[in-house]
Length: 147
Image (cartoon, rainbow, N blue to C red; front, side, top):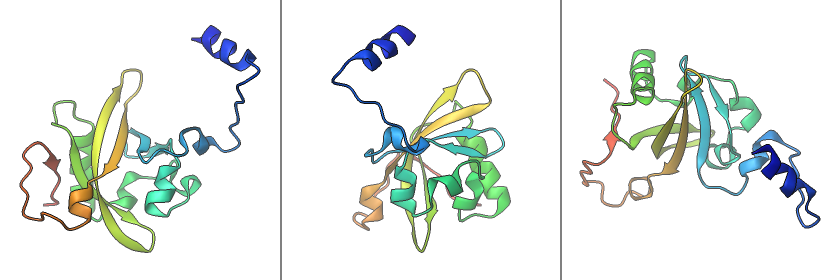
């Protein structure tokens, strides 16, 4: 892998710029993050700021719980589901936005085999966010409802 990266870096037609740590995945509509077992997360893409309105630097290292509109017990139950490999995908739940209504997201996960952490990728659940087909009963998702 290192030799591949070195060969890319040595090319004259390639410019590698990373002025901000969250700019690596700039332009993606996907919210990428790594969630640790204690609920703190590392923001990996600028899409968090674009979608939720919170600066990435503010979210990075904070608890996922601050973005959830549940009581602490329900938030911990959701964290257990996020970190459970047996839980079906996608997980669907709302996250708070800064100064706006929460948005409903579909979350896909990949488990970090080297640490107590999960990589998540969130996409807007556009049908439900737009209010269309509110009666839809999609059995393929795993919608979280706070107790």
